[in-house]
Amino acid sequence: MKLFALCVMAVTLSCAYGLGDCHWKILNCAESQVNQWLNDQIAVELKGHYTYLYLSKLFERESHYYPKVAKYFRAKSNEEMSHAERFIEYQNQRGGTFDITLVQKKSGGSCANVDSILKGFKCAKELEIDVTDALTLLQSKVTAVPIAENCYSNANGTTGNDLARAQPIVIHRHNEVSKPLSAYTCPHQHPTRVTVEYVELTEMIAHEFLGHQIEDTKEIANHVKTLENIGTANAGLGSFLVDKHLEL
Image (cartoon, rainbow, N blue to C red; front, side):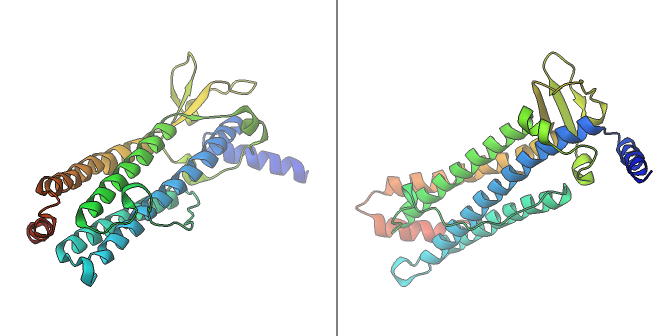
C-alpha cells in the first residue's frame, strides 16, 4: 500500500507540473550539460576579472605609472566580475548549482610580459576576443542541447528541479514541429534526434553580452591602433599623451 501511495504521489506531482517521466528525463539530461557550461563561462569571466585587475595594478607601479590606464583597466575588471555574478545569479534563478573554480589570469599570447600600455591594450583586445568566443560557443550549445541515449536511459524520471522546469524550453525533434517541453509528446522508445533549446538563455547572451563585447573590443582596438601609429621612436611621449587624454 505504501508503494502504491508513493507511485500515486509521484504521478500526481508530475501531472501538476505537466511533465511525465520522459519529460523529466529529457530535462535532467539537458540540465546536467547546461549547468556545467554555465560554470565554465563563470570561470572565463573570472579569468577576465583577474587579468584586468593585474593590468590595472601593473600600471600603478612606479616603473609603469599611467594612472588613467590603471583606472580604465580597473573598470574593466569590475565589469568582468559583474558578468560572472550575472551568470551566478542566473544559475540560482534556474535552480542550477554554480561553482567558482580556481582560475588564473591570462598569461599567454599578447598577455605575456606586458611592459607597456601598448602591450596592455593588446592583451585586453585578445582577452575580449577570448570572452566573445566563449559566449558565442555557449549560445550555440544552449540553442541545441543534444539528449544522448546513454543519458536518457540512466536519467531519473518523475523528479527534478522545479525552477529548471520553469525555464522557457523548446524541444526540437527531427521532422516534427518544435514544442515547449510540457507539450512535447514522448515516444515509447528513446527520443532520437532530440535537442533542447534554452530560449531565455540564448536571448540573454545575445542581448546582455555579445553586443557589448563588440563595442568593448572596438574601443580597445582603437587604442591599440593609436599607440601603434605613434611608433617606437616616440613611444614614451605617445604613451603619456594617450594616458592623459584617455576617456574614462
